[in-house]
Image (cartoon, rainbow over all chains, first blue to last red):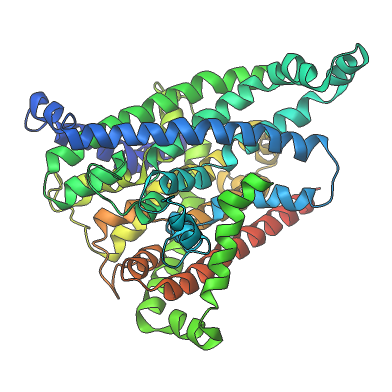
Length: 266
Length: 248
């Protein structure tokens, strides 16, 4: 019994020192000059634009990665083709790559000066780097694997019997997918979407490299936090952090609501 | 596949090609200059320390969450994932608030090497816990009870029964934590001060190279980082599989 209490104390103490107290402190620091000051700091035009831009990242990257994720998972689980194992391994690649390296890699392809196709893009009036498309690409890169990873085990679990039954009864491929497969994997997809969203909201390193950090133009919410802090506007940095931390807590809540549903069904 | 190529594969290929642009000599010089070596060494040493600490604390936390009962356990359990959900720049600011110059407890770790390790511990916290937890849940207590009834002490039971069963999960989680730690950037920006030769981690060094318009130097160190992460991931995966086979 004594060991049990000691272990509990050690584990909770570690968590409090590393996680609990520091996060609580961010909330306290944000409101040290009052709620009004914090509210003002996150409603300046720059702050609003930063949050708007983050929402744009999420709005583009999440649906695209979701569609890709489901298709990719279907290909990996249901089809037999050359390079399937390779595809399976490649999908996890973004987990092993530093965000800064992601940004640099995109720069080397799409950058106007040293990029492979940057010059051609520039001639055609398309700006990828230091503008929104590049930042969206960076966000897509880092959040690529989540939906695939969540859907693959569910697809394996449900098997192909129902799909075959539907096909036997005359359903086409599309009908089978939308009426049979998709409803069966929906919680896995939902869980993947939540993880993708969280990653897209919080991406910093990759976006930082490709954005050029032009305040009010290519500055996302996370870049805004850094910018405010470097300019000694602590209230601004902490207040924007609180907004992002609240979004993270909403994500956690969503994860906790979805996870049991996924497990019950599986 | 085309989508994967546009978003991920072609850029990574460009990275590898560009790192070799100036020939092998340039590549070698870029990764062996003093500043690059200092940054790579800091990143690798800090990542190893972080993996070892995580193996112990992660297993401990998982054990407490599975085997112990106390009020508020559900909340603690869901908060474990917070470092995944929290943007890394916010993680850095969070740590700076508690372990920085304005620390309410007077512990100022900002701009020290320790701050690098603390930031990495924060962002890698969930990996080992989430890998060990499901295995511990599945693990029957019968074996442990049998060992205890045969006179084994608590330490012996843990070392001889529990640990071997958890080893594959600890290794798998450790590998993921290492890969994450090696590439971490956002949480280091604010708290480490990014001082060259001192608290500058490899990813921060790469960022600096990009900003000072040295894509070849940046690519070369990136390739080293990428290879290190992949090798460790594969190695830990292999170890974890081997440990599993041993169990059968």
